[in-house]
Image (cartoon, rainbow, N blue to C red; front, side, top):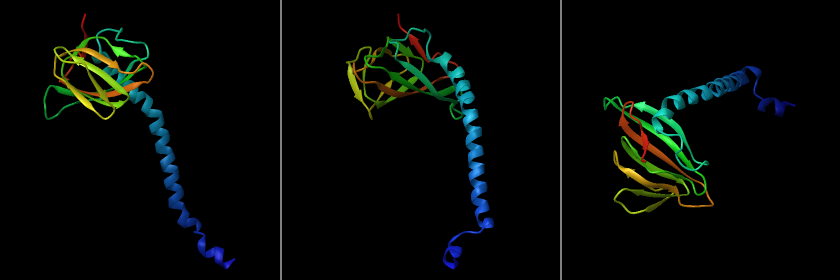
Length: 167
């Protein structure tokens, strides 16, 4: 009995551990309850800026707002980050952006063509740039069987319509 007594921490020694566990669970609960409303608020601000038409492309494709912040060192400019999901064979019809866009492919392969340029295919881990106002003729999943995804980072004027579809 003496051997096990020396290995077991006393109740007062375990108290900080239990308090830390309870505090951690309480924080997780608060964050879990606040996160959906925070994401809804972010989406409500960013979504109207992302597109000027509801018919963007194929039905399995979505644009998910991640964040948007005013740039304090560049007055009048805002950085907005979105995740674009393309289902198999998915695409976005021809469009342009109000500001500069850098896209980073996170999954699959993206087929892209700017007006005056050649069609290019970008694989996961690669990125491409779209200058302000350039017409993006092709923006599509290069695969008809696998999904693709990219992260787009916009830098544009505060309040600008980020994406406008070309008729």
